[in-house]
Image (cartoon, rainbow, N blue to C red; front, side, top):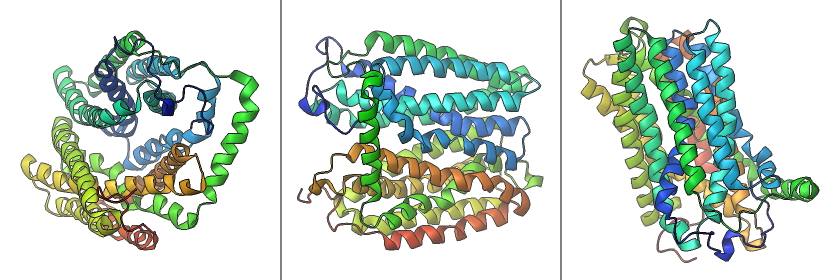
Length: 450
């Protein structure tokens, strides 16, 4: 969370970074946001597949990996510390080395007798480093480029973040399966994947240490001397957020809109991997990397692009209910898969593509609503839009963490068919909160007046 008061050389003044004429944004923006996306998918998705391959129960997998959301939930609480000490550029490179070391450490913990405890501890370290890196990288992006370049590279940021998700959830899962087959050991296959990731992250950190520009605005933090001032600003940010009109409905929507998806997400990979006699589809790890990690995530990305186009044409108010339905109705695909157990990878991939495409459509409505909430009150002179958006993302992560924690226990007790039926019932709170929120008529529409 940035300090609310603009300092000299803030991004609004369009100051060019030192050496900007020599360093193109193409040299660092794609790699920076690829690096930003990869640790998140490792912590949230690869950990699930890893633990499933190593024989953990769905109850344990969902509970332990859902706790890993916590750093993103409370990220706004420690973001002022990154403002107090050092520059964002230094934070970025230092945290990338930390993530690289953590990835290598996971590789070392997998073959040990205390794999679960040790790997979870390292994943926690990685999650905190990744969440902190998000803060530094997003702030640095605004400082290192003039406004016109910030807008021009927004699409590049998003694309390479998504590519990191596809590469992690698709390519790395497939690679882990391939290496496990070749070596005859699941643990060895995953250790090689995490070891390679750690080395790759260290190389990317060295690359960024060399190519990241040194913006004039990215000055060293004020240190302890300014701590009191930043704490006061920090409290003012939170106070202004919770004074927004209709805040109770806003928080309900942020927490409950993804209530069914939060439970489904944690059990999707275990369902695909579990044998048929346990209610799953019995896919290999490589097949999951193809169907869910590559085909599914590609459909998710396309759905997000289409959702953004729909909102730009119709406005969020008119598009809300079609997008809400698009997000939740395709969840029936998992129920149908659990009932029919198709053996064709093409059929499974098609079903996952439909579900993920709908999720991508519906998630754009959620993101646009967070932008609306963050910007509300600007007419009264509030200067906290960026910080308010960060608070919204914290509640978004909390809405994913809590339902995810019990989802594995619920599935273990119900079985997959009743669990996926429950996921459909769990859409009711989401529909209820969507009916309660208030959206200006033209918000989000491309031709709307400012």
